[in-house]
Length: 303
Image (tube, rainbow, N blue to C red; front, side, top):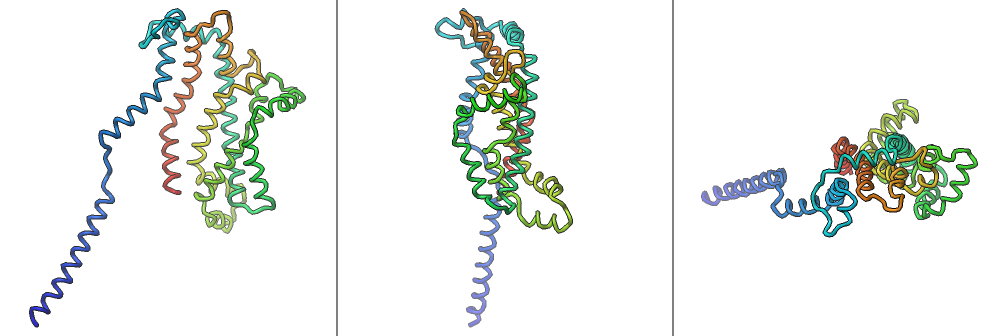
């Protein structure tokens, strides 16, 4: 009897100790930092090289001359004409004015799209009003219409306003986007609790203060992503600017189009111009890429 009485507590204690030890090991295992293996580094290296290949080839072609680019096999290393070709492309295309215009156009479109899309997305996500579902459906439906169909009526509209060959012709039609509205609406549905809005209104905040102090801070990660996508799209836009603008007030893409004219286009100068047109995007990503990626991760953790 004595042996049995001593064995039972010992068995219970042993079982409890094993359970605690297992739980402790699980906690330690869950907090352990994961390390990438050699296969991961190989795959990432391959993807990085494939992604950088077009940019590197553009730089190589921009450093050669037109005769060398026409030969086979093509050059695989840099030449000595890079800076002379960059200078020729800058002077021939008038890229100084074009860079300023593209910065104004892309910056204004990005700011307008981010602000208006956030406001519209907040309204669709958290406010109750009549026909909200129908309006959201119509907004999403506009994404299915090819933009080429709107070129002629849009051009006539801008001509009637007297805005031909002016930058506002390119800025105004794209100050808000259906994609941005839907994107912000989907994000705010999860990232913005309705209790925060109700608490702000109980504290006496009006709609403007709610948007400024509650909605914008909660939507900051998605706003950063939408801003980057919008800036890249506006900077690279070609179809509507080439129709609405001329060579006196061009954007970068319209100015680069002038480099391809002539009986024998100079491919090296064209590549140099393309490299100059890409550099602002690379600089913007290098400067703000960390904040944008951090915003994406913050939004993922919130979701």
